[in-house]
Amino acid sequence: EVQLVESGGGLVQPGGSLRLSCVGSGFRFSRDWMSWVRQAPGKGLEWVANIKQDGSQKYYVDSVTGRFTISRDNAKNSLYLQMNSLRGEDTAVYYCGRDGLPAGIDLWGQGTLVTVSS
Amino acid sequence: QSALTQPASVSGSPGQSITISCTGTSSDVGSYNLVSWYQQHPGKAPILMISEVNSRPSGVPDRFSGSKSGNTASLTISGLQTEDEADYYCSSYTTYSTQVFGTGTKVTVL
Image (cartoon, rainbow over all chains, first blue to last red; front, side):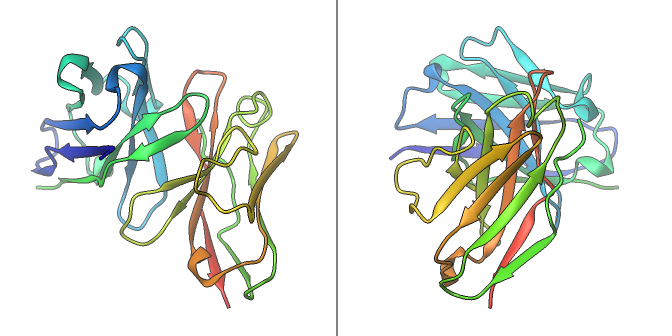
């Protein structure tokens, strides 16, 4: 079955860190760009970051630049998002997605909830 | 990196056609034919409905179609069905090599 499964979400205090993981299966993970997209409770989608097949190019939304780092391990079919200096406004469901640049995000995980609160 | 502008809500009766607009700038929608549309039902992950302005992925009904003129893209749903009731988001590649989503539109089937 072609799927993405995220993990690593949870409750963290402001200023803390969290690492999200996403494992792909049923497709050749190393062939695709991958993205993280988040959705705050009751709000719209926000693109967070993406990474090229070999990890050589990475792009971020301004609000997370310098705090979040996207990475991947193709040998483990895994995508990661290291989140540091977390703020309340980072509270959201985080989705990983297979980014078929230029053809849109055609495969999404189920999402993992990150809550930043004291 | 401001969000693309969509109407908050659009409604229609079964069988009717509706159109959702998505307005950006010359730095995103206006620069590339790289606009996608996503459908999201409550509590579910988004689903890609349209890519590259007007391409439908396999499995998407042909009542969904996309277009673009200048800085504005549009999604049209023809022959509206009850299962089409959902939130819809556009997205675009940008000149900064990033992506940006629209503000989202709630479609209600009356």
